[in-house]
Length: 133
Image 1 (tube, helix red, strand yellow):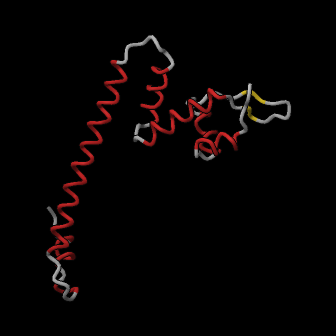
Image 2 (tube, rainbow, N blue to C red):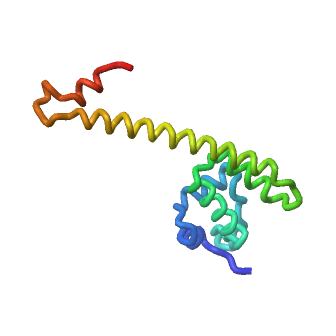
Image 3 (cartoon, one colour):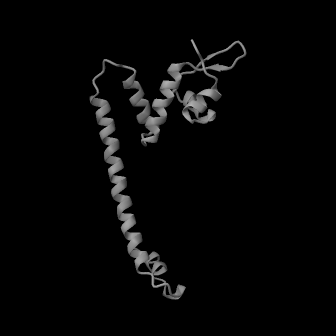
């Protein structure tokens, strides 16, 4: 069976070698077998699992949630109800963040819109930032 060095695994997944080692230390990625020269020998299963982890992280899932998703993905007979719950909870958090960012955007636009490009003494941005809400 073909195996990968950590460098090849890192390149294939656009992941730093140190991140791969970190995922091994925290148990997200199984420790690979070692070659006779004591190099890590990663298998295609490591590549698939690391891609799963990377995609989950790119979607903003926390490491705890990635761990849960991996645990469920390893049990193919399991109902996907819990995975749906995790994904929906994450979606709700993303929607809440988007709403917060939209409020922040609006407030910044209002503050910047009050600027008349005068002197600092008359700067509405400085005045607004100094006003507590």
